Image 1: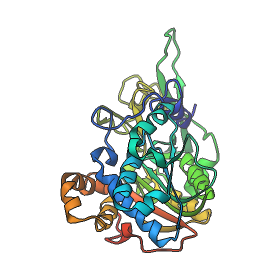
Image 2: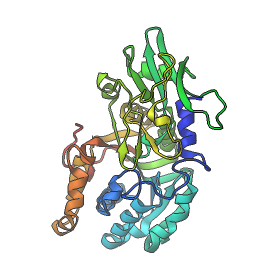
Image 3: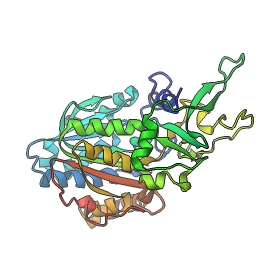
Length: 370
């Protein structure tokens, strides 16, 4: 099977998938931290951007807030509680749609929302058929299944996952290389003008392209805000990432993209990377190619409004909070914007449709990518 098919099973299978079997995987008791785990300030800052959109885009009496990859609903709850405290008109106009693949997580959402659950309009594994407002996806695209390829002297090869032979009830999984499963992989690289050198390994996220196209088509008017770790294609497909970026997170440790941690490789194209260990028991993730995501969105009629580090995005939004509010969340704010941490590793891509190119508060400090 392709690496993408393996990841789909390991992460999202309803019976054995890593995300499917728990309502929440992040936080101190989980395997990794996200900006949501830092505290409610992240959601309170995003509420400033939602309120900004509500005011400048004339949504008037109703605005859809769609969160994709919503887990148990903590981020949406933080946004809604901030709106309830600060802006009654916005709160009353909001219709919340939570999109989450895990049935366990969806079952926990209403309890997480608690006092703001009256704003919940839908909870589903699928995007709303049509919506108008703001879609937020925080660390969604990096967890979508990817194809892995490697360049050899005779051309592009794809990495596949195979079962070992033998009498064991659970033969050890290993990787091998063969012809690409679809011409779309080479076409993807060609569209970017990317030339991988022999020996370079890379991930191609066809699912992210399909997802952004679908989201753009369903959005009648409004904004999509994507927050994730990744790079422009010229940086992602370069010598600096020539080992690939597919990695694992378990107990707050990343294994890195190492390909042959165990002895016994039987051919140059075969091995047992760390990410094959314990499928369903650890997170699998790879860096996002923002160039391709942006191009796919623009091909569906969306306009890029901003692409910047999370640091500068949140500094722009912080102007919408009082000094007292920021002081109350001082440690949280430092963690969210600290260079070298969440602030610079996470990028924010803001796309608009049918709204022109407004001067958004989130782009008011500095539009810069490091």
